[in-house]
Length: 193
View 1 (cartoon, rainbow, N blue to C red):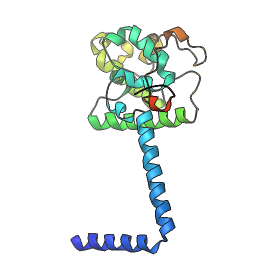
View 2: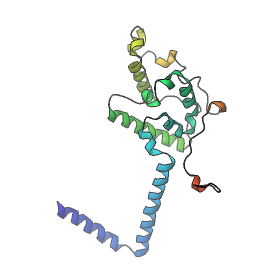
View 3: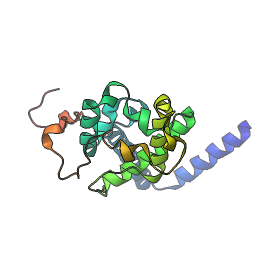
View 4: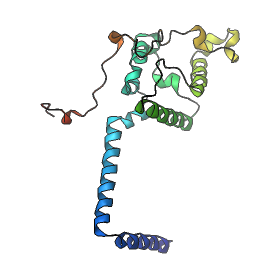
């Protein structure tokens, strides 16, 4: 077992020392730049905040300000956080798998500016939100005929959870909370630490 590791290290060393000195320097600079970019990306995107259940995490993306503001002012703002409705609760693996998949999709959409003017739940998110509505409101649903069917979703009748849906360009500025500081003040002139 240890011989295999020594052989692998020996092979990597031989390959590395077979390269010219200028290529070795270039390789170290490239690796440093990639680590630096990864660090900045993790810092600016607040990547570790996505492991929490904090509603402020949803504010990391500017297009969620209306949803955050309406949640904060609505009845769910006093009883639930975003993840209570928007991620599965069957087990931790499904919760973080869904958060990872959804987060990857969101990162792509918002990085490349492909967000729609009116935000809607994705196909898979619709099932998650519907099952969480039923999970939390089971007692209220006991007498409702549609509770066990897929004919309609809860928000077909109760569409006021996040208030009236606005397009991104038509949402009222006065409802928007101030975006959190990205923590990059050191790049601004005249701002002390």
